[in-house]
Image (cartoon, rainbow over all chains, first blue to last red; front, side):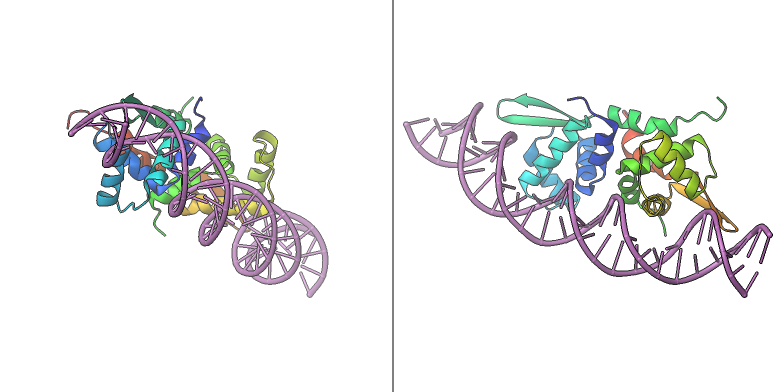
Length: 97
Length: 97
DNA sequence: ACCATAGGCAAGTGGCTGCTTGCATGCAAG
DNA sequence: CTTGCATGCAAGCAGCCACTTGCCTATGGT
């Protein structure tokens, strides 16, 4: 699935998903359970594992999170590339074209 | 009202509001009726005047749109400053701190 | 083989919000 | 002062989505 600009902004609209990006921005290659722990401990995000998993799915569909499987573990990492291109339409505005 | 980061991303979540920013990015100082016309003609946004007005309110609360009153006209302009600071937490990440 | 761990799938529900409808306000031209 | 235009306010309804609950698959250790 190719990520659209709309998917990026929809993904960023939820506070829980922004907190996930914050945690992943601190350290890459985290599993679902690691994320659940750190979200509850450091970001006051008290959701079930399934809720976090669904949020990760949205972020992955938007291309903001990339994953790598190894056995029964799935490691998540942040990727800001889609965010850069999503906001460039307004931030890279030329003053004198 | 001081705009929060959450307000910025909530504002950007709606396609209609992103279209409004696109129109304002083209030309500043547009009135509500001008915006309605250009949104319908060039961006396939077919909403009532009140809907557009509410969207403008959300954008204004987020600090993404600034307004200037003159008589019975109200001119709207884009301001990308809150957007820059909202995305900087992920985009301005230092590789070697 | 068995059990515990890591994660996935799916349906149901409550609450929020986006849009419309109807009316009100304010300014300006005649 | 009346008429018309640009905008503002508020309530109500319908649709969506965030979260939970319950069950399932698979991998790895003992």
